[in-house]
Image (cartoon, rainbow, N blue to C red; front, side, top):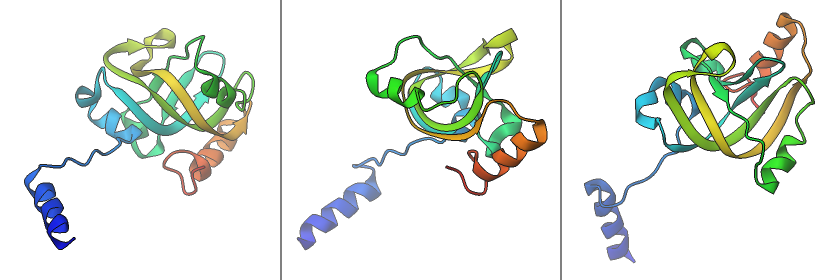
Amino acid sequence: MRLFTWIIVILVLTGGIHSQTTPTFCDLIRNPEKYNGKEVTVRATYRYGFEWSELYCLDCLDQGKAWLDMPTALEDTSAKSLKKMPKGAGIVNLTVQGVFVSGGTFGHSNAYRYKIEPTKISDVAVLQKGMKSPEEEKNVEKRCACGGTNPK
């Protein structure tokens, strides 16, 4: 058993075993060239309504938001998760798996520098139903959004 433990330690230290880390949403935004065109899974806040569909995290909000390019067909588990979302407009936290794209402009009026083309959406947590005043939205985000004091 000791020999086995030493072998594992040596392999890790010499790079023989690579530990894979899952990027955060902010990792994508801060290093878009590293993740461009790659399949990623991230947890972020999704705010949507009439002309917006944006993923973001408060920790890197100053560096941009990503357009969430919702497909018309997703697998059954994603469809079930989407049914939890408020109709029309809202703010939710969710986990999205899909292809991250940078190097262009995307979304409504080409207002976004990044987008994610999802293949799977899960773990939806509703933060706000419908549209509220900007002050109410900020309060919800400060508490519960990605990067907030108590994210869901």
